[in-house]
Length: 171
Image (tube, rainbow, N blue to C red; front, side):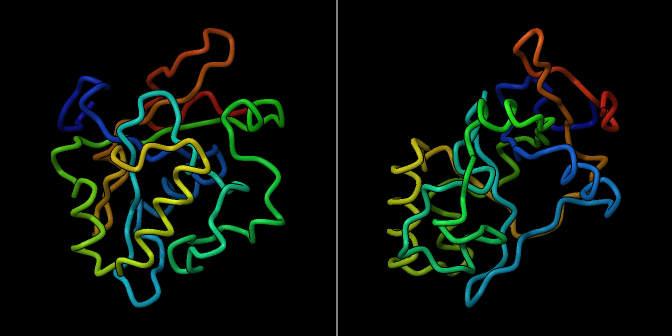
């Protein structure tokens, strides 16, 4: 693994599904999602099993601006977000990791991205509703080349994350 912080516990993770992981690999980089007035951010979490806010979910605060939601649907349109629900629906889960020390931690990521106190409060509310610990959030303002990311997939049988460099093991 070419990733700084080769121990998985030193990495922050971008949790995703196989479809998005394939798109990220095809693009050659993990790119920040579009922001409104704020700078776009690639969001990561130091949660080591799953980040509840990683996948579209029904826990978004109605106060959270669309720009911070990224491509989330409206709260009423959400039907799943938990790891268990995604697996039950047949999703293949991946996580892309990079050394936590290379990212802006919470709350600094909100400050460097120019996120207002109001939007930050809405994000904190959404995180709490989803069971996420916002103190585990961190992020980057620039694209991260795919080949600099650790890649792991969730192995349903062993119920563990396993190394998957280059995204092998896709159905």
